[in-house]
Length: 178
Image (cartoon, rainbow, N blue to C red):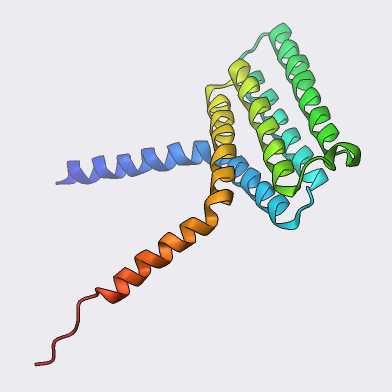
């Protein structure tokens, strides 16, 4: 019995440590979703928000990459390549947010485009630095069409929910008085 308790305790500890190790990636994912949600609802992009998010991921990529090696030359290469990589994506985000460019996109499209740029930058950086970062980039990229579909299908999803709720109320079991 004590063996079962220690095994179940170690399983929960393992799951907790796995979740704790992935927490920064989850936070970035949630922040990206909040950025898209705000941009979609307000119709205006958060100019500094997306740059901050890209910069934060870029710094994380540099730190993670430098932890993987002790070679000074390799560390310098990681610092230079990741800095240039994220600088390019931050410039692309900045161009997308310019008023002369942004007039071609509505609020939701701007948010999705920025998230897609962030996803692409994250994936490409992850290919060179860490599998976890590459997976985060893939998840962010897959979220873009999912959010677009959800926005287009929101009314039908609400109607389906109302129909299901109506059937649940109409066909609920009746109390029998004794």
